[in-house]
Length: 104
Image 1 (cartoon, rainbow, N blue to C red):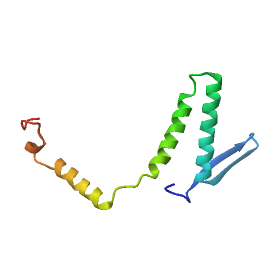
Image 2 (cartoon, rainbow, N blue to C red; image 1 turned 45 degrees about the horizontal axis):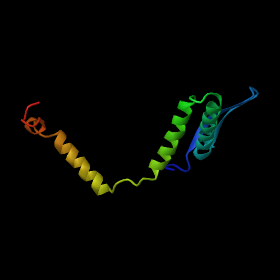
Image 3 (cartoon, rainbow, N blue to C red; image 1 turned 120 degrees about the horizontal axis):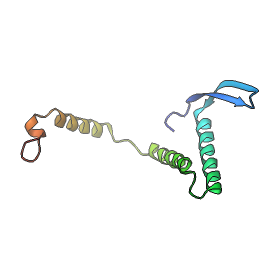
Image 4 (spheres, one colour; image 1 turned 30 degrees about the vertical axis):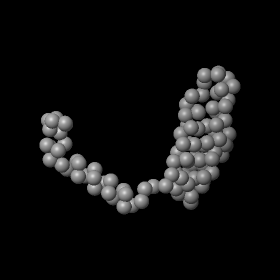
């Protein structure tokens, strides 16, 4: 994870008796959220075969997001070189930015 020591302020309500705001570790909060989405998607499939698309979209987005976190970022030199090329094109004279024949 990107921020392993992050904490999330969470409103906890238990049977309308206990209401409190607590700080939970982000890992715990995300784990609970993921399990709720997974359980809700599974229950929606049990009720209606075509149901639960949103629940499974959340599950899929979470899994893909966790996978993309581990993808290494490009080296700083590569990022700086790409930024220079983009800025060069953006700041180029109109004749360079035009289409094939130089017109827009």
